Length: 225
Image (cartoon, rainbow, N blue to C red; front, side, top):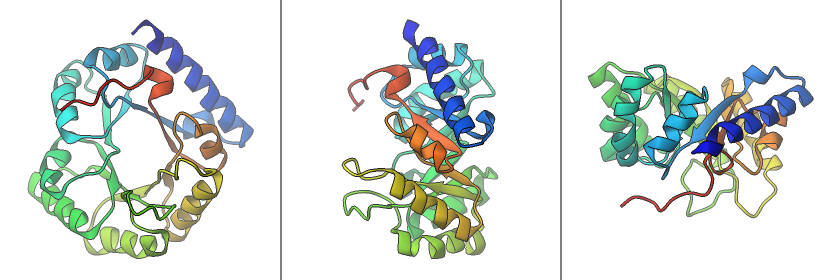
């Protein structure tokens, strides 16, 4: 845990440098510290170092860690960045402040229903499968604008931006540029793109949120059952 504060400082410096290189203000980029598979103690170390925005992949894991952390750190902001099962929509709305992985109509409808039921309206990002990978979640690029319109205009979801995870083996820049162009056509200002290995490229291409895990917390621990 002793390295977390130093790692965070290093990542923040890199973010600031990348932002300035793109003629952007450093505070125009939000660092989402990806804490999936990490223990609560690691999150506490990041909180003590001033980090407030965190990302989790799974509802159940977040439920096991974050309610107690929120009591001690009420300004904590939690993003869901992993695939969401429709039957977990209610739990997700209750727990997360941002849902970055809205990727299909059935889920969008379930989230809208739960927002009405609970009176909570976490911001939403549409996940775009920029590489059109069959094994990966996300709406395909050619369908993204219509899905944004359905989610935002028809269902009333608070859609604020787009998210993508480029294919691992491909150069990420074209995927980031594609996501930015879709966002511009859809009138969206937020872009969640870029991870530990490529966030500087993402910032150069307009990322407003970068998702960094291993560069802060080290290697992932074994995924909880």
